[in-house]
Structure formats: structure tokens, C-alpha cells
Amino acid sequence: MKKFFLLFVMLSLTTTLFAEETLKGSWDRASYKLGDEALLTIILPKLPENFFVEGIPSPKSDLNDFRIVEVEKKWESGGSANLKIKMIIFGAGKISFPVERIKILTEKEETSYRVEIPQIEIGGRISSSDSPPAVASPVEIPKSFPLLETIILALVLLF
Image (tube, rainbow, N blue to C red; front, side, top):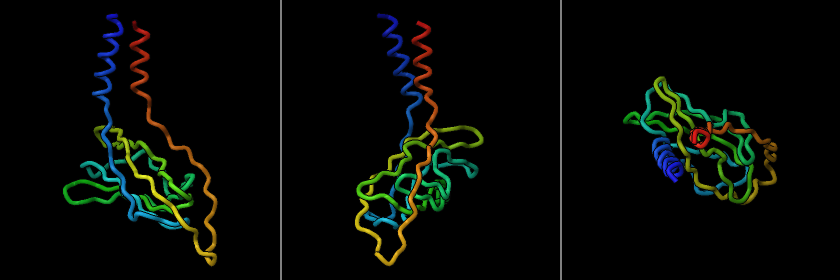
């Protein structure tokens, strides 16, 4: 019984210590059509000027419903930054951008964030005079390190 109580306390502390902050993403328009260019903006926290974002596909990457055209860091007043991702849409119906987590690396620290990006509705077709978009191929996005699972496993093995 004491082991389970201790394990519960350790899990609670670990979850509290390693809780991820959530960043919000927003689209530049409410609706799109197949083949449209879309702009996704992810609002980042206040950061130093030299930082790297891990977990965002690079330009020219093909994801299932998107082809990344450009990724840009744009500084705002007050020291905050926005991550702007320009892409071409290939999906139809309700689709989601496949990034759920990003890591921001600075000279001093590495921080993981959960990213909430709303689904978008893709309707209609491109006109018959336009050439159809190229078929996108899937790209694997690296997953974050399962630190919490490793800590739990180590605690279970100790007891």
C-alpha cells in the first residue's frame, strides 16, 4: 500500500513539474478550397532572439494534406514572436495540421509545448482551367522524448 501511495505522489509531482504549456495556432481565413495557399500562425512565448524551433516541418515538406512552402519567425513588439507557416492545401473535408508538440531550444534551456491548432474545412474544387496540385507524400514528424514514462518505469522497478 505504501508503494502505491509513494508511486501516486511521485506521479503527481512529476506531472506537475513537467506539465507542458499550450500554444495557440490560428489560420488566416475561416475557409479554404483545394489548392489554396494558407497561412498558419503559432503565437510563441517571450523568447531571446536566438532560438530554434524543433518539430515543425521544413519548407518543401509534404504532409498528408499540406505542402509547406515557407516557415518564418516574425518578431512582435514586447519581445514575443510568431511562427508563420505558409502552405498549400491538398486535403478535403475537415482536416487538421499534424503538429501537436514543438520544442523551443535556446542557449539556456529546452522547453516543450503542446500546440492547439483548430481544424479547417476544405470545400469545393479548384477551377478546371487550373492545373491540379501534385500528390503529397507523408513525412514522419519526430515525437517528443517520453520522459514521464521513463521516470515511472524507473520508480516501478525500484519498488
